[in-house]
Length: 304
Image 1 (cartoon, helix red, strand yellow):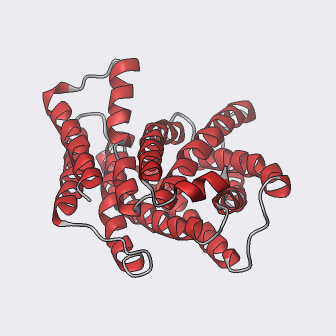
Image 2 (spheres, helix red, strand yellow):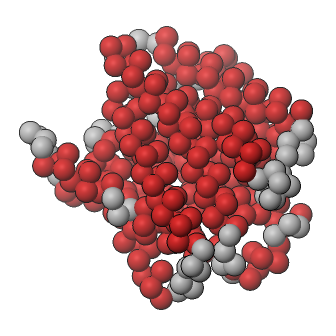
C-alpha cells in the first residue's frame, strides 16, 4: 500500500485520490464532532476516544509498520503537543458554547489560517502557493460558515452567559486546527512510509488526554457509566482513524491548503445529517450558505 502511494504521489491519480479522501474526511468529521458534543461531557468523550485509538494503533506500530526514522521523533512529539493544546481548546469551547455555533466557527477559522501557515512553511520547500481565485474561494467558504454560525447564534435556546468564552476558545481551536494540519502534513511527507507517522501519531496522541479525563471523572458528583463512555470511545476511535487518517494521506498527495478547504465542507454534511436523519429545518438562507460553502471549496480545488 505504501509503495503504491509513493507511485501515485505527484500524479493526477494521486490528486483524485486526495480529493476523495478529503471528502470522506469531511463526512466523517461531521460525525466525529457530534460524538464529542453529545450528552457526554466533552472532556470525557475526548478521553474515551483518545484511549481507544491509541490502543487500536498499538498492535500496528509493534508489528506492521516500520520503526520511525531518527529525524521523525521530534516531529511526532511536536505533533503530540500541538494536538494536546488543540484538544484542550476544543473541550473548553464545547463545554461553554452551543455546538451549532462553536463548530462552524472552528471550521471557518481552519482553512483561512491553514493557507496562511502553509504559505509560510511550504512555499519554498514544497513549492505550494495559491492564486487569487483560490484565495477568493477560501474567503467565500469561510464567510459562509461564519454567517451560518451567526444565524445559529441568533436562535433561541443558547446560554449567552458562557457563549462569549465559547467563541473565544472556538477561535483558538481554529488556530489549533491550522497548526496541526500544517505540522502533520509536514510530518507525513518527512518519512518514506506515511503509515509510520500516522499510526505512531495516533498511539502517542492518545496517551495524555485520557488522564485529564480521568481526573475530571473522579471529581464528578454524578459519574456517567463506563459502558456508555467505552461505546462512544470505540466508535469515535474508529471514526477518528478514518477521518484524520484520510486527511493526513490526502496532504501527502495534494496541496495542504486545498485539502484543508475540502475538509471544511463537513459543515455541509453536518447540516445534511441534521436535515435527513434528525428532521431539522434548513431553510432557504441556510441552503444558500451551504451552496456557497461548496462553491468556495470547488473554486479552491479546481482553480489551482
